[in-house]
Length: 432
Image (cartoon, rainbow, N blue to C red; front, side):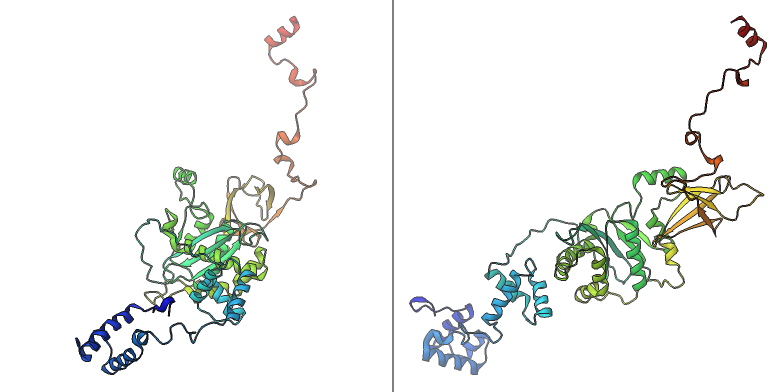
């Protein structure tokens, strides 16, 4: 009931009132009235009986204005508001509802939580106008057919730690994801994440990435490679080629929207989880991911592929440690030495029968920091020259340049170089 005897009625209840009035005036039979209201004949007479006894109020739903069977007590509402003002400030209604059930044994639908937060002035419903975008691309049909990779730079530890990068991979067909923290979006971090993916699922058919020089070479490198008649590849691209993985370049962020939206999920849920756990460093964050954070997201958001066939290839018998390494080429000098990273190395197994000058050596820096060298396709031993003075490299005497030796001394006046060697020069010297 409202003020001054007003009755609050729904549209269906007002329609029922009109029909019952017509039945009372004998303008309509009960059979016709039940067909109009889409109720049974027996229900029609019950409703008519309440109308005759109570009037319009008899047609209002009996539970209106009362407490619902699943209503939440005021103490629980106050507890939810108190928790949100404390450690869960900034959480979205969906994530907050999950934490209430997981850590506080309060089971409430996220929509109920949302309405409660709005009523308490703790949440503001914002509607974002969607910008025009390209037509929606259908998902790939098979798991492992296309995997998107991207790096998300964000203040993951908020004010507790430095800004860092989260490398993310997500399967296009299923939404299965995997992530890894690093200081920057580097070749090493991309290799480590792809290695983790292969260890869990196998070798995917293709990777969908942006145009960063971690994944694809820049324009200058492509032009130099074209002039030299070789294929332009980054270190990460070389590893993918060895594994038979095709790298597809995305020309806009919208093109790889699945991994971009996944970054948004991490920036919402993962930041708050790190806050709850008190984690403020990369090592601790990676440990949290390894303990099942990604697995929980996959259980919530991953779907079944349209086709059951898995397009991942097994990595059995593949030396992933050698594939995921940084390779360089250096030229040997005549005394079997080479320079790398401002250090001089002497190769073992030197031969006196021929000079290796202009021969190429492949250097392979593994992700664990170790260094190996390969000459003519076979691994070769080496040792580093130890510097006599810290910061300087000890080099063989014949390898030192004139600049390293210092400025040569000037010859004395009676030096043989100063003696005339032709008759004309001798006569000029005698005349002077």
